[in-house]
Amino acid sequence: MLQLQHITAINDTTRPWLIQAEAVHRELRPQMDASYLTQLEEIFAEGGELVLATEEQAGRNAVVGLALFRVYRDTFNGRKLYVDDLVTTALKRSGGVGHALITWLKEEGARRHAVNVVLDSGCQRTDAHRFYFREGFVITSFNFKAAIKPTK
Image (cartoon, rainbow, N blue to C red):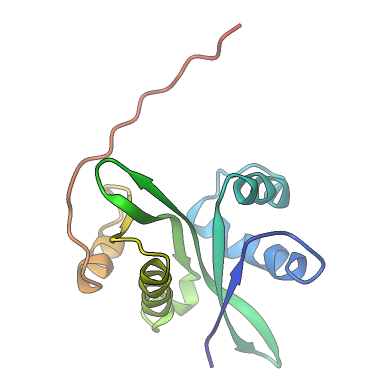
């Protein structure tokens, strides 16, 4: 049975789950810094939150998906729940994990008076795009980025 856990900080209770979540998270973001927990600590300090999807496997609970998100207001969307990362481990895709995470995110957004759930998805991720369309998402804009040169 799938269970969802909301995590907003690293502590003795959440640390084992986050250590386990790292492998799943790296399926989406293999380029992340080596110090996963340190990176999450900084993200949590800046308002990031995590929801983990877990299920029993071989007699123990295992992380099978996650969503990293934050809630904030901007002038384009108003109050929104922005999803930084959403990933289901490869062996569990198309099994309802992603749907459960999206449902939880929409409900959490409503609880916190957000008007939209918003996310970016790489242009090459066509399978993910099909999933988002099925979940009721629409394309509203392009996302552009430009590197910033470090100052001396």
